[in-house]
Length: 434
Image (cartoon, rainbow, N blue to C red; front, side, top):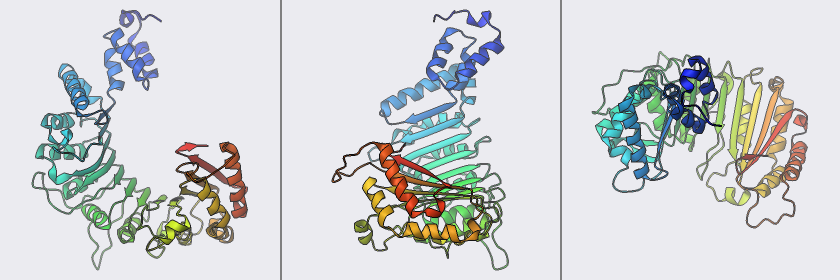
């Protein structure tokens, strides 16, 4: 199809906008429209620049070229910076000298500050960024993003020694906060303005903390709401609806319990992402009593299955059912309506061995069938996730995934007889749903 160069004058502006809006997710088509007519360019740019990613996956030279290209476009049309709603910074080349380009390039830091005005979502993913190694220009740019007026989503991964001022900034208007493999300090950064005392997050409804140590959780919590005294408990989160945690050590359970208490009147969804590694231990129900959650609606519990030989080599062998059963026994009767259990296996063999031999399946079935507090559960999802289909030592003639899934489902029904007609079975292999 040949496009007319005068498409702008030949069609009403409203119709042009509707056509472009219909292709908003198709960047290639948007690029074609953007060169057809000047009248199409502003609308196309609105979508082309809605999401921007700066990544080192193709090398820092390409990253620098993309950055300068963006700056030149903004220099010609300053409206472009107001189109940016999502910004992703991804640095996968951390272990090197000198420091990464994203850290050292002050012109890039200026760009970050330019893009903050209408930003809604910000993501930073790195292996090991140390806040204290940042120049003041980058610290100020990031803090400015954290407090941008429209920001509602923050995802930080691999950022270490995050100062108190940033913790307070997260609480200003962010609704969805995800922190992975990062840590917080209570230190004051001299390069940043002094943070306000205890800014209770008014809009926070989703909080996900994965591989965040106990001291960091405490520092984050103390930056938001006052430390309890003998006469007063902590204030409550006004809107925290979903709490997702993935601790790597049992010491983190204490601060997580404080989060649960601070959301006792609002939390509806509780997600437990089981710890990976040698320090993994079952959930201790005495530390996390979900019975205080008045509005609890759904629990998602994800665990990793360890074969006997691996579990026996651990100092505290984990049991992927003990924690779940203990947790369920704390739930307030008549609240939970949805239960999603996900178990991660290395391969098909481990999953089948677990279904055949592990007594925990029968224990879970007994709890759900015999306790009246679960009578209101109308959706039970059992997810089995295989990292790979077979190990190198496995020899299987059958490779039809639907047949293998049917075999697992038969075993599952035998171990969970009380739920055989009411659960949803999901099998994923190498992140692909079968």
